[in-house]
Image 1 (cartoon, chains in turn brown, purple, yellow):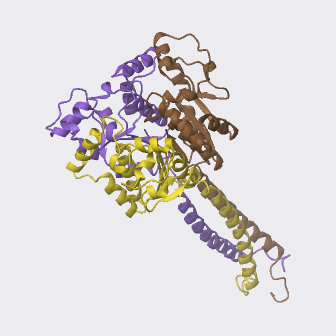
Image 2: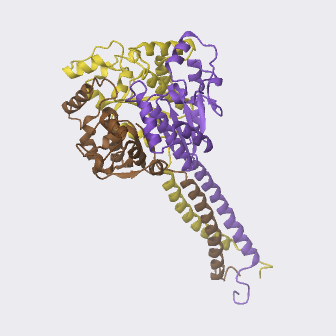
Image 3: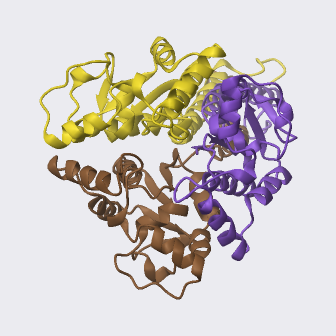
Length: 199
Length: 199
Length: 199
């Protein structure tokens, strides 16, 4: 019978194809669910840096890390909080009305990135002058150039609104192009990041 | 023959189903193994923070980060080591018998979270008073409230036993509800974490 | 017909096997692509530590973290930059010709790991003496022993070439067995890491 009939009748072929598809589709769904579960446990190509410090050397390190991460193809986000907020202060910006403590804090804090001191060997500002000169002599980009480079590389800069509130710093006192947010804004980026630093 | 016979005999159907299942099962096993291999390379929804610093401002930042991570749904763990151990000291706790160096260290270290100074602009404690007042004025939670909040959010607090040993600090001198462990305890949490900070 | 014929003719079996394999192979390819996409979003069993600080206590913490990570089975990499470079200075190494600023910097920086001060309570070096004595008394390994342990555990130590260039430090002034590189070298390790710390 097989000798003179077709090797397999078309309806058998159809039945086979349908049965295979049924089982293969079920397996696809099962595997897709498992892969989705694993995917939820992965990270994006992203980096986040908390800039807590208001020291010149640490600010430079933070921007070198941020621009390095962006150059490596990571979506990069910086969260400026506590003393780190000083790095974002606009030079010579008029400050809004402040209370006594807020004025004292403003007087004692660096007025812009140009007035940051170093974390050690500062000697009342001499360390910052030396560090800036050493970097200039070796044609290494300055902090202000690094900030510009970070902008060009689309590094997201978040000003911590809680720190602004606590120290009475208004948006007008900060440089342009910032994102404003709190720890929840930072954390939403951080949980998706490959690299998370606190500087 | 096909016209008057069944489209496919039941035994053919059975053979087909069995063959499909055989190959599909093999593929499922192969894929499950590959997915398990990838899953081993993922992270949990977890965060770990090393609290190395004994400065008030950094301790506040650490607890803001920790409670923020916990609020974002991350299982959060803090490892208090070196100066960070001071943050966990109980106010007015009698200390055990100590050697000369241990006593000198205890005298020179903050006796509890209430005596921490700031990392800059401390002016012999004035900075801490100012920071605490500025936060209170703006209704921002204090360090002690943040510690309480961290407890409520089930943040795990690990006291570094090596630091305790080195500085002669006994368990009785630290607040309640701590986990005790060394760098291995910390690392077991850190390797599974999305966010790893050193403060 | 079925009663006296074979349950399924060999050619039907062949057709079935071929059809199943066709669809199963297609599914395998589809799933392999999806798994590869997820795998690209995972991390290696690796840790990276930026050593920015030149303080004895922070250097000790960095090496405790690094050796702890390596002991936990992580491929571990340390990136020594800014003040952290001092930790790698060879004791008593003759330095190359330096400019005025470079000489001033060298004079004011610790000349080797043995001359690092502590980040707080240093009292012109007394803090470092105390910390080293407290650790010795408790049989806790010294910084130099930790560095040796890190080497034994194959911890990769990267000296930041930009920092070397900025401060005029030559390779001859640093200990042996280092890798030399910049932020891109660090970042290549960091993006694959489970744990990323900045100390």
